[in-house]
Amino acid sequence: MTKQWPIPTGGGLGVARQFFLGLAKIGLEGRDVWAVCGTDVIEVKYPETCLRLADDPHPPGSRLRTTMLQIQAIRRLAVPGATVIAFTPFYAWPLLRIACPDIQLVHVEQSKGGRHHELAAFRGRFGWKERIVQAAVALNFHFPHKIVFPSRGALSLFVEKNPSLAPVASRKGIVIHNGVETAPSKIERARSEEAPFQILSVCEDVPEKGLLDSLRTVEILYAAGMNVEFHHFGSVRDETKRVAEGLEIPAVFHGLRPRADILAAMQQADLFMHLPQVAVFDLVLIEAMSAGLPVVTTPVGGNVEALGDDYPHFAGSPEDAAAEIQKVTESQKFTARTGQALRTRAEDNFTAVAMARGYLEI
Image 1 (cartoon, helix red, strand yellow):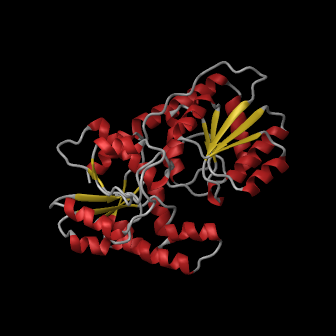
Image 2 (cartoon, one colour):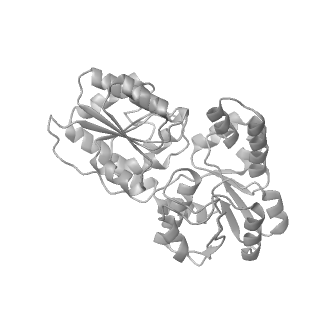
Image 3 (cartoon, helix red, strand yellow):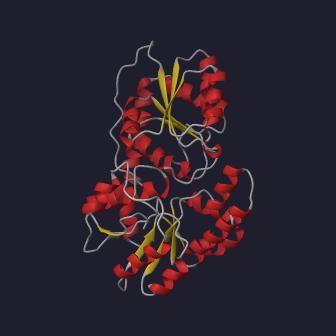
């Protein structure tokens, strides 16, 4: 169940899409699977329509649909022993428990400590809107039977930020790592000294994603005489563009682009830089690993679980990130080995198939 059709993006919608694609690889194993979405088409049978819509960059219908329509759809589909998985926030669990007492309810928590804290960080205050969302988040935890977190770090972060919900989160919480389809591998090519070292970044331009730190990293490298080029995909604020212009660095902002364009950029890039202040288990990080790109990232939350405690290229500051990138560039063979090791780790642990199996085991 989602608020709109699963599409190639991050967050719950992106995870739902990968779940569908993972199911297509392993089969239904005797199960019936239905998608219920908050759009004008509220119920379709998997896999025929779901898979097509999972790759549609412009899904049909409005962004939101009334909760009662979702409940009505589920009520018609519900049979004893069924499981309803909500990949995006659903704030009518109490009504659903009454309407469908014989089904198991699973809430998937992809936020960084709770949607109310994310909203407060974006708005710069914790006001009445945040308090309303905080109350709604409590419904997401008290009424479902199980709560899925994408990493141990995500569970720990939620418990830390929401002490009143810590007991229920710890009791109901289970960890299923996010997974992705295996991405096309990076194109290995001999790089001439004249060619710039291409650094790729993919994220939304919000403070906790660390885009400004990435720009400062490029500034340090450029000032040190490194022939570098920074490519960013995702939303960008005008003030961030002004910062880049003021730093006078070679930065290209591509904006919001289809997933196919991002995967193509990963094939051409030399390194993936991702410097969030908070991370749960970002799909784009796993996609970069799957593509065989060397990664420089912050040692926070799900990043450590994705890359491993002993990964050598964690960075806690722009200065550290610049130093790690310089290490990576010292040898093309070393760079290739690092990327191949990450691709192997992603294929062994973080595929869409592995994630789908985890949800089926619920």
